[in-house]
Image (cartoon, rainbow, N blue to C red; front, side, top):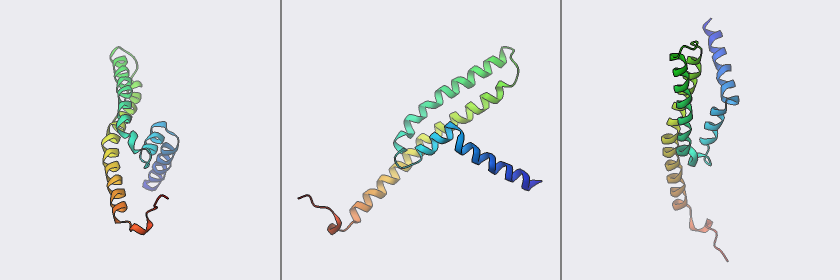
Length: 115
């Protein structure tokens, strides 16, 4: 029983990583070229939080309870985008520091001299 649940969760995670737009965007941000977009991507949390607020106000107004699921997904996506900003900033600083160190440690004979 535990093994079945484990296998289903693995397949569900793989599906979500490949086909859900927020996960595709977050994977693109986590590349070396995309790290500069981490902090601006934090602004995408605002529409998600607005959508969650609208869903909860609809429920308070007398709608059915199924928008709670939508609100939960919106809050989860907003948290992912809020967290990617600081994480990408730290990763970008680490990459730049390592690139600077590798440039400093490179021997002078391998540096291209313009003619």
